[in-house]
Amino acid sequence: MNGQRGVALITVLLVVALAATVCATLVMRQQLSIRTTGNQLQARQAWQYARGGEQLAMGALRADLHGAAAVDHRGEAWAQRFPTYPVEGGEVTVGIDDLAGRFNLNSVVNAGQLDAEALARLQRLLVLLQLDPQLAWRLVDWVAPGLAPEALHRQAEREYQSRSPAYRAAARSLRDPTELRLLAGVDDVVYQRLLPHVSALPGNTTLNLNTADPWVLACLAEGLGIQDGQRLAAARGASGFGSVDAFLAQPLLQHRQPSRNGLAVRSNWFLVSSESAIGERRLRLLSTLQRDGGDIRVVNHQLAPPLVSENHP
Image (tube, rainbow, N blue to C red; front, side, top):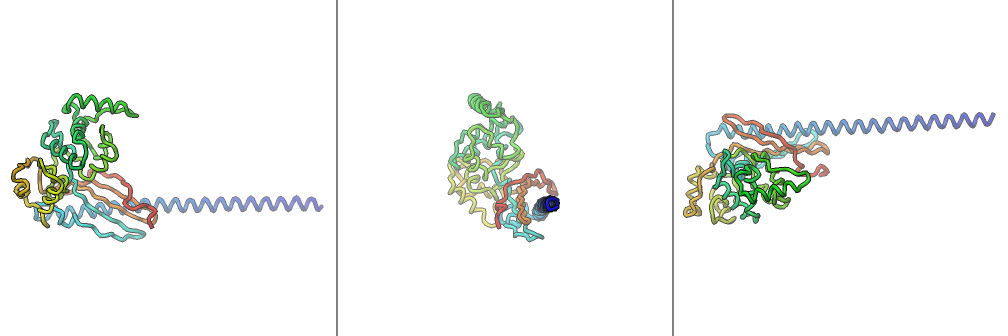
């Protein structure tokens, strides 16, 4: 009898232990499901808030487009630092950068032909950044191999074929500055030094003198240094150059006679950075916008690493 009672007690204990284990597993799964659902909800909220920041930037650019001024400069409302916008569960930050104020890499080849002036400007920019000016020809070879010197083309092709996986020059315009990493001679140091000063826009896009940085301004004429570029940037004042002629009339340029080809004081291409922080989730959306006629359109989207770590308190 005592033996039977012992067996029954052990059986009961085993059932209780099994039930407790099942209950604990169910609770853990429920907690994991709740956390996963919460993370998905935060991710969706972060995306929608980031898109909201994009719409806010479009509104600012649309308002500027409908203004009376025919000049875009760094003193305008769209170019100022936006406040941080509090939202339910977090915040949103928005910034607008003028892509037309950067050197357009695709300008070296325009309508299938080499643009000698744009090539010379890029070579001068590379020198100002203490980089190899030969990289300008490697870009030409990447975009239009038939326009580059034959020896350089063969050397670049050998390097591309030796990589894993092997590839060939694109023979087309760059769609994004990140494609620079594919070029022969471009490592991470070169890429990071060049990236803030360049864009990849349609080849006929003009450079806005009012938003270009000192390095880009200095590359527009032979013999200018970075201090000259800083002087030209300071000469814009609070309202920028009113015309290309006003820029060319600067004393620094009087005896250098830079070409007016590809220069402007207006912009139609912008990069919007919209970063949302919802709970522990951070998302940064980069949007390329084009002002086309009387409206603004989104050309592309891409996600980028947050400016602040997701673990930031």
